[in-house]
Image (cartoon, rainbow, N blue to C red; front, side, top):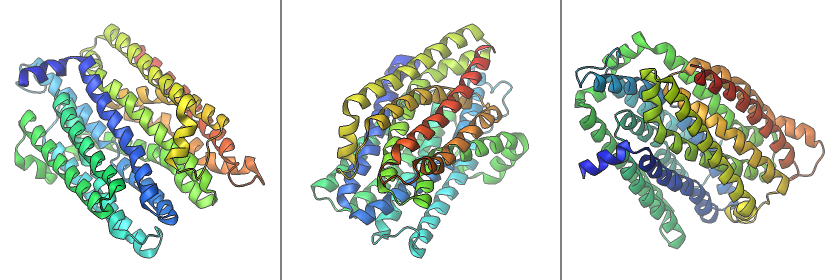
Length: 442
């Protein structure tokens, strides 16, 4: 079995297929949550649940890109150690205590997020008669921050395939538990089982990282040593990554809160929720294709093989655009029907809104390839400069749409919003194309 997994790990095609399977399950999960909860909750409870989802997305984004930082540092160390026949990490100053320090930091963010959700429910910011279900669902979901740290660490250690198999099994079990609600399973029991399942996956991932890397148990809890090393050596990168992540999470999640603050139009909220789900689905699909190519791309980059890097980057960009084109074709065929089914007929998707979403996804493909690759290479300050115009455009899209719509009836603002939101993605894509050009030139 080990030999089979080792061969699969070295095959970019098999690795990409495994990641695509995991992505398909992740996309299915995102739509299944809405499909199940819109039927399991009364109307006002579901509207509150959408706000919880927005805060959930916001909290998961608040890992500040630390997993990207740890991937870039651990990857350079691991490749250097391999080049030196396992003696050391070459010129890298990486220490395993860094993983433990970041693990504890992300754990503290999860606790803080849960406390904020509990407070929001208590004071009525999130109005619900099901506080326990909302809180447990939130905890189950935000454990993805720790799962992401485990995933990135194992990817840097050339242990992608083992984790993808475990993660696929976790997602399949989670989907089964979720969908069982439609067949009579108690909603409280369902979210509680999800929490146990995700917690068990975190523990399994920690064990794999420890065995693969040669870490000791004490490294996971060496907050003073690991935190001190981070502060002395690359706190500046952490700051850039944190600012970048805050910018991106505000850009992608901000319209949820802007719509809630400036408009009482439920159809606009449902439109953006659909757009967000499609963006997330396409983005994680492209991420799967890039992650399958990252072992080669990072190896070429750190070794200085510019010709091979350019060829691999061009192929990765074409694959990313291909994913967006496939998503566009699927939307043109089933987009309206999917929208209607997903939201139980409470709103409709217009043809022009759907066409603008198709254009937006093409822009997204360029952004994704650039962001995922640059993050793996540790180019956080450059990425931060590219993200700020996108942040401004995204946050302004809702007030601009309401201004353009004027006295339009509720339900007619969606097209204006899609025009403004797509324009923000176009500007961001142009900036990232420039960054890709700089990478190609070395």
